[in-house]
Length: 114
Image (cartoon, rainbow, N blue to C red; front, side, top):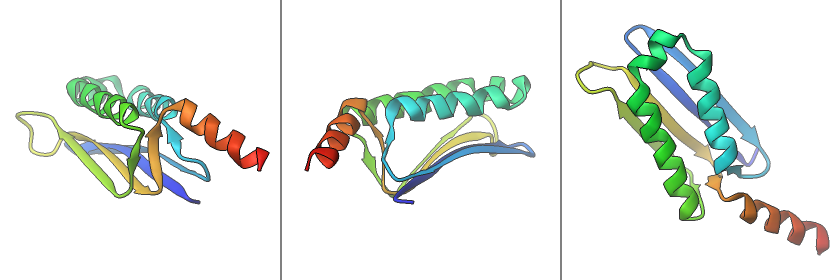
C-alpha cells in the first residue's frame, strides 16, 4: 500500500492501536474517525488518563489538514504530564495523511478523466 500509519496509545502496562493501509492518502476526516475509534475502543479508565493527549492529537490532524496534509515519516507523541510513559502516538509510516477531502476528490477526478 502506498499510504499507511497508525494511532497508538500505550503506557502504564496498557497498549492498543488503530492502523490504516490504503492506496489513497488518509483524509483528515478519516484520521479523526480512526483516532476516535481508538479512544472509544479502549477502557474508559485508559481514555480518561489520556483525554488531553487525544485532544492534542486531534489538533495536530486539524492543523495538518489546513496545510494540505503531512508526508511520511511523521512520529508524534503526546505524553500525559506527570506520568512515566502514558501517551498517545501518531505515526505516518508511508505516503501522505490528513489531507483535506477536497484534495482527494480533485485527485480522483483528475485520475479518472485523463
